[in-house]
Image (cartoon, rainbow, N blue to C red):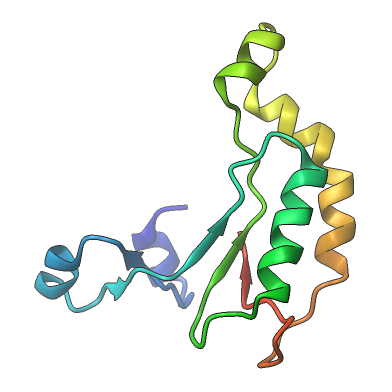
Length: 115
């Protein structure tokens, strides 16, 4: 979906942008929302990272827990016929279980947004 389509159908859309200069020029943009990016190739390592972040306490504002896995050079060389899609789909059942255990709210171990 495009942003224009989302607005046409009445969806609420939050757009955050890391470039402060652009945010100041375009007041419809939000400043960067903190993003917990694990930079991991294994779902177990990613969940361990996210749980560690939760234990350290959440930011006082919106934040995003990113469940996107990331291929690094070692992974790519070890899986020459692999793809990010294959990596993600094979890990999805494990990640989905973690997602179902999460809940929103202001408590220290709550998650705002899962991307």
